[in-house]
Image (cartoon, rainbow, N blue to C red):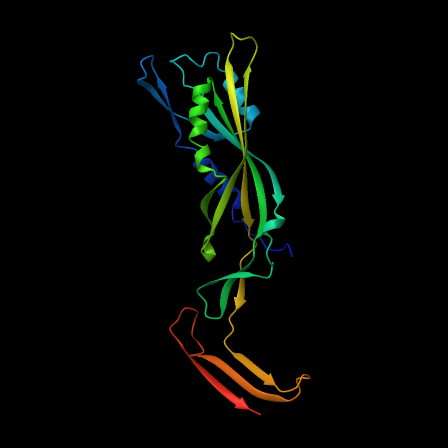
Amino acid sequence: MLDQRFYWGTIRKSIIAFGNMFNSITIERRDAEGNVAQVLKVPVSYASKQKALARIQQRPNVDDMNVQVIVPRMSFEMTTLNYDFARKISPLQQSRSINSTASTLDAQYAPTPYNITVLLFVYAKNQDDGLQIIEQILPYFNPDYNLTVKAIPQLGIKNDLPILLDSVSFEDTYEGGFENQRTIVWTLSFTMKLNFYGPVNKQGIIKKVISTTFNDVELTKQQTKYTVEPDPLTAKPGDDINFTDSFENF
């Protein structure tokens, strides 16, 4: 059973697609008169909450204009992977595609559904920065958002990848005393509905079909025999062909 090597990069493609959703978010900083004084693009990376916070806390002064701005920023990580019984379909269903041979097709059995939980963390030093980011995310999830992913290029299979927003929470913490650095962290929990595909196999092409009928329940008294074949027999899938058929009575 497990003797075929294959790798479609399902999780990798999905995680990249997830991160790309958030890589164009910007925030504005305004002066006392309400004019836009600064526009910042919010960077996003794959990292755990602990790792991202440790990196932020290593900077002694995030307001120092001589150093790169550390917050606001975002990070995300995959946490759990669970089978989705609600999306189970018959494992005998197949997807097929034409290949370069005249005698076989590329075939693949139905995918196996799984749900992946992904946590998105939004880090900010003040509430307004965090709220600007959150308000650019929430309207798109009502409660889900669909992305299209090229699942199996060999068969031309593209999947709609539903991403559901399950929950939103935040915490406002100070490290040390109130004179030290403040970090506000928003946590958004998402569920991605993935399909995992097995290997692509070669499947023979049916080039002759025979249909018979009987006039008794024991199937011993044959009445007719109907035969259909492509013309020419050397035709490949996708060719412009005719069919020859024959009908016999008994």
